[in-house]
Image 1: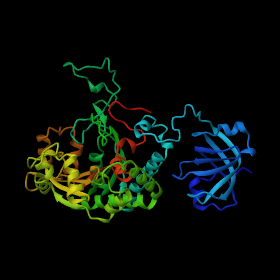
Image 2: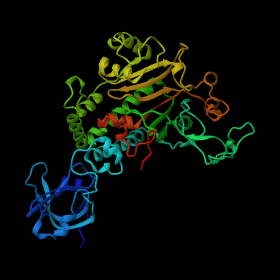
Image 3: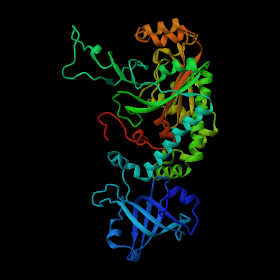
Image 4: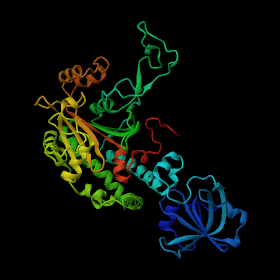
Length: 481
């Protein structure tokens, strides 16, 4: 009878010496001599490799030659207690089948240290390295935690469109979606492109946010969240920007800015606790990797140890302060006075850059910060206008090493104030009539926020580049695979 395959994770957790099992996976390394070979096998279920002990005289020489790094093999064997350190059990091979060979002359991931830049070029194979298998197992756990958190709270998961006719952020950095012939598009009499001839009968783009449609759901279902891909055609080649990334956007009826802040803090802590409870092996591996990478740095330039950092955020209340208070702190700060900031803070109304956000979090308070009440001139049209006439009930959550990780606000529920603000900001009200209907019919206080999933992943994994926490990064001049 054919032996049923067992995953390496399950085998290491529960296997008893003496039992016979089948394992399948990819060879990480093979070492040994003419009498005995040791094969490190990994099947992706855990960061741990399973050691396969091969008694060389019992196997065909041609078969053993095919067992090279990267090859896929199936092994039937007996579980035995491990002689070496690191694992309690290994497997003594009785039968080996090579499922897929990997030519060692051509296979790019040989057992040596590869740079992250090199692995980005091989993004289709990088899942097979310890670092990336750990990152993407954690990514799965974090996505699961998102749904678990909102489901427990009675939120409804809503799918908002990826193709849209509206620009939620008003930034204009959108990817156009069109089926028109780029060489010979239909033209209007004035020479402009006639989008009435296009597939949707109007100009359409990939979405930058599910928020506006999410608000419609919240104003009927109470509390909803979206979790899907969003797109920004921003020509930004930094370690924190992607052209395609995932956003989690809850929208809640009857919530004000304080309820919004409370929910966001609870949500972030829930995700971090989930990672600590369910991904410890992978986190420990990534922590060691980070410490290794920072060995040459001065103590003050090193990051806090990864697991310690996650626990620190979990155990501390986030600092809450207004934009006005933040500006005073920044204006009087040493880096500002000594002109060390790239963007000097002259006064109220400045748009905070990531250097300012990180100063507040990492130097001043040494814990996450929620900033509220921003000048209305630097924020989007839909944010609730405060009574002072100058600020809006916006909030940004700033994390160490990352800067802004969450952006949100109480939404403006007053029809007149909203339409006035749209006029001031040249947002075409006739195109947004559907959105304004929620203010015409049964309007109520409501709020929401957006969490960039990849920025959260950067924080949880300790990786330094956002391209390393999404399977296939989309960035300017790069859409491989």
